[in-house]
Image 1 (cartoon, rainbow, N blue to C red):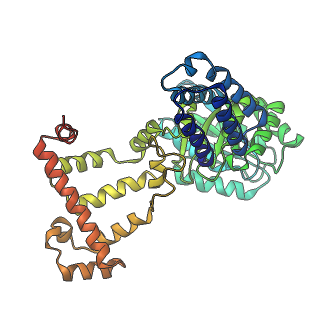
Image 2 (image 1 turned 180 degrees about the vertical axis):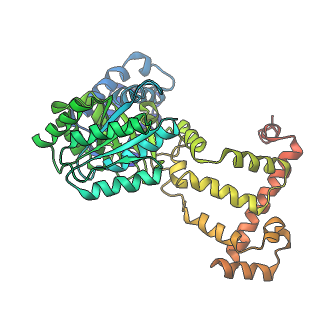
Length: 445
């Protein structure tokens, strides 16, 4: 997401950076590029116009024009205005504290938006936060939706209330609430029926559910891939039903980003959560400042750290770090390191969160997660002794390993060379007295 937008903005700012002193014409030309980039990203026309106007008003001030680093000042202004447009700060779910009553969440959206999958992701997230959620299948029209929710509930390890006989969604939710209380569950997540479009029957049913079981949070799930249409859907819901926040799904796909940039401004409701993958753990809190940083190619290191803390085995990571520091790092440890990284998702996705790696920075890089598969296959083809003592791997052993892993000898040699280089660096670090002292020597300090 945002890749094309980031490229266009990066190009505009680079042109500004080539000018020693900015004029108003320089800024106007750059902002023309910014406006076109926003419109191409499917941002609402009124939102794009308002954003560019706000940036222009601040960018043509004397503080910027007289600055020694005017291009950086403009980027900062754009970053600040993007952050404000996206909501300023993260909007938390407004749920009662644990132990102070049952929290209720109604999940709404059109068919195909990812609504049912999101229910499972939310249940998993709340469960990890120490709550005890229960899912309720309130779609009385599509048996497949009930089946899907049952599968998801089993996957994330939470109970689900279903009723295939009743044809009143509000009653099903009421009975689900009673069952949740009996099972000492403290969060009720209601998966409501979807439609191909917004209609009176859908709204009446959602209003009836909310009246029967008042909701703490009413979340509207929107497919980011639909761009401006997602904003139109949100606007219609906002007119008919007072929902509390939006959830954007499929943000990891080829979405141009228009929905993320437009929803808050058009509807007045914040984006609270975003789906960034197909796995149940692929759900993130929407942080406007971090998202603005991603758009401008500044990276998102905080989210990367949070993902590492959630998905990686910290005990194993510390063990590997200790082995590294002691100079005892073997190919078995190397394999463990690869498996830890794979838990984080795609390598390219992780690199995009690093500063300076947005836009087209990764386009020419030959980054392929299948390389991990080849490396693991080569290591798996070794005997335990070979993994612990790679120095014994001679020519005949290399041929055997290559045959067993479906690779060739040159690929085996490449892996062994990478391992030797890593071992050599470890020795240099340890000889220097640790990573900090090694860094000082490298920098000439």
